[in-house]
Image (cartoon, rainbow, N blue to C red; front, side, top):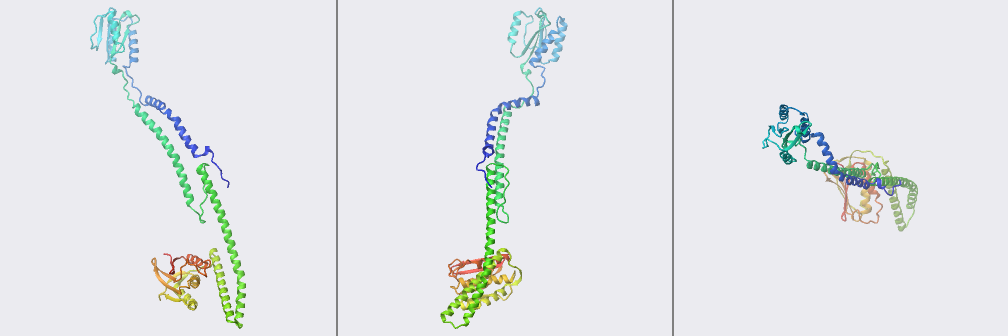
Length: 455
C-alpha cells in the first residue's frame, strides 16, 4: 500500500475549521442590522398597531374633510356636525368661529378662549398651538375661508399607539447570544466528531483477532485522521505479512526438526549396537570409561531428539491427548520408583511425602508421566549439586498441588549441562493443554514446581 505523503489543504481538518472561523467573521458584522430587521418584521407581524382614532394623520385628514362638507351650511348645521364629531371623538375638545369672528359653539373646551375673534387672535392662537400640546387642527369651513373655521384639540398622550412591543434591547441581546451559541455549537460539533473518530480509532487499535493483530479500519475521509487510518492499515498489512512469514518459517523449522530427528535415529541405533558389541570385548579401564561416556551421550541425544519431536507435535496440536479421571499420586509413585536407581546412583537424598489417599485429576496418564519424567530428569542434569529431590503434596490456592522440589542452584543459575530448556517448555505446553496450572518458585536455595488443577 502506498501512502499519500501529504493531505491536500482543502481536505484537511485545518481547512474546515478555518472555514468555520471565516463564516463567523463574515456573519458577525451583519448581526446587528439583521437583528434589527428581524425585530421590525416580527413586530409588524405579531404585534400590529391597533387603530387609533386620535392618530394625528387620521384626525387631521378627517377634520379637513368634515369642514369641506359644511360649505355654505347654516349655523345650525355646523352646530349639529360639531356635536356629531364630539360623539365620534369624545376625548377631543372642539369649537367653531363664524365669518364675523364670533365664537358659536364650544364642546369640551377647558381653557379660556375669546368670544369674539380678531385676525390677531387667530394668528396668536395658531402660533401658540403649532407643535404644542394639545395637538390642534384648524380647518376652514367650506371652500371659502370667509365662512369661518373649526378647531379640534386632542392631548398628545392620547395619540400614541397602544400596541406593546417587546424590548428592542432584549431582542437584540437574545439574537446575538443565539448567533454566538450557534457558532459555539458548530465548533463543539466539529471537535466532537473528531473525538468520536479518534475513539473509534482507539477501539480498532485495541480489539484484536485470533492472531493478536487488530483489524484494518474503514477510511471515509482523507484528512489528517484519515491519513492516520491509512498508516494504521499499512502497519496492519505489514504485521500480517510478517505473521505469515513467521508461520511459514515456523512450519519449515518444525519440518526440519522432524526430518533431522528421523535421520538421527538410524545412526544413534548403529552407535548403540557397536557400543554393545564393544562391551563384550576385553577393554582397558580407560576404554570402559570412554564406552560409558559414549552410551551416556547417545542417551542424551536420543532424549533430546524425543523432546524435539514432542515439542513439534505439541506445537502443531498433533500430540494425542486423552484425559481421564486418574489418580495422579499413583503416577507420581510409579515415576519416582522408575527414577529411584538413577537418583541413588547419583547420591541424591530422595524425599517422598505422598499421602495414602488417592488424588484424582482429569489428565492424560501418558502426558502426566512425561511431565514427571522431564522434571525428574531436569533435577538429575541441572540440580545435582543439591543432591536432593522431593515429591510431595501441598495446599495451594484452595486445592491440593503436586510439588517437585530440589536444592539446586536455581532455575536461572548456570549449569554445565544447560540446554535450550526444551524439557520445561514441553512441560508448560502439556500442563496448559490439560487445563492445569504451574507455579515455579526458584532461588539460589532450590526450585519448587507446583502443579494443580485450574479452579
